[in-house]
Image 1 (cartoon, rainbow, N blue to C red):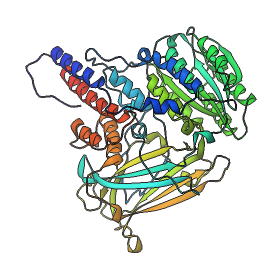
Image 2: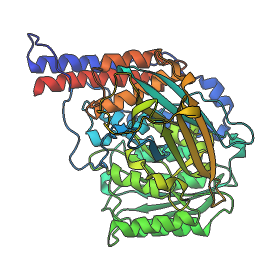
Image 3: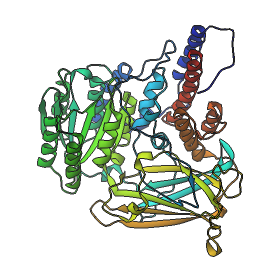
Image 4: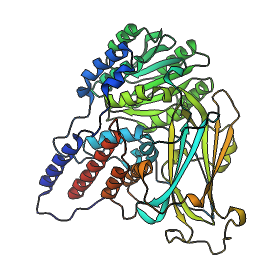
Length: 548
């Protein structure tokens, strides 16, 4: 929490002043806009027609600018997984860090929604990996024969000059949109009474219009709804039958209770009946809150999702709205279902997730992707992985092909950041052990770390191994620059929102300078929006201090 010096204003006046400032920040336009003409050229006429129809109503579904500051807590019915910050590790005791990759972005957009509404998120709503991976970074494409390229950078930590940041970036193999496999998509939609709000069912319908406008005759679409009971609204239909699909979407309305047991069973039945061999087979669950399946316990639902995953049907979850949102359940179900979790807070986010990133989300190039980093205790005394808390694996899990891990889609980028302390740098925060050996010697003396990547090709059950050694020669004492600077700002922002335990003397101004330094090319305005969110969070934090 940040504290403001005393000013001769009342608390109410200060909140009003910061609210007006925040409103100005929130409404500031990006410096660069995408080129609409260039985008339209690349789309079919029917897709453009659908998009124009959706975008005409975009203002209805976009977060409203704040007229004044609202300092409040998130609704108590919203549920988030327990995600404490990872502890600082002493390399001499535990030199190996192992985790499953993650390309979810739901935490970032959900937190963006809260900040745009004028309140700080609960700490557990913040997952640093979602913040980092929301943004695209420029990594070299893998060689033609490789599935991934592994990219590393080391530079001085912007929030502690005695420590360093170590970035590991994966770049997945790129595929052209024309190479996308045929998709069999079953939309499992919550139409219960709680979905009766502009940012829920109407936004969901508009989002699906955007997605289905990208499909063709080789694709299949089905729609199942659930409220008090489940209903098949659209039997498996060719993707180019847009009139029929749009008509089905227009019939949807919200009302009734929430019981998804019949819905999820029916959704998987439809996915199985129209299964496309060698294609993409996926159930897409969209809801604003609990997915109350009516089963005896949650483990029964998880077992069902695991069985369907093993048979080739993945599960993606999309969150909408607020009030009763169960982020913990949505994220865990998508992890079990070999899918992604995204939170849709505006029509622009729907376009990003369901149009711009459709190929990456649907076309899986590698399954059960795991990363293991071994640090050299002779050179690195401490390390800490930023985020990925609920993706951590045991050391022995890395070589066990039966252990489930994350999936990577075509063109996906995955970034992880470690904060490290070099041995003897003065940045150590843990006392050294008295009787510990001095560490690696000889030919490994200049090796900072070894990175190992293990993954399975989609049709295989045995994993492949790739490794890379990071040398001391790659270490830089200079400031982080470019994409690295922006990724560090995203990681730092998430840590500040979680309480800033490891952020030393850093503040929002430090992060703002870091983000602005790394902003670079920003054609869609996502980085500019992030900078405005930083400004908003600082103002809300200051206003919160007045009310304590």
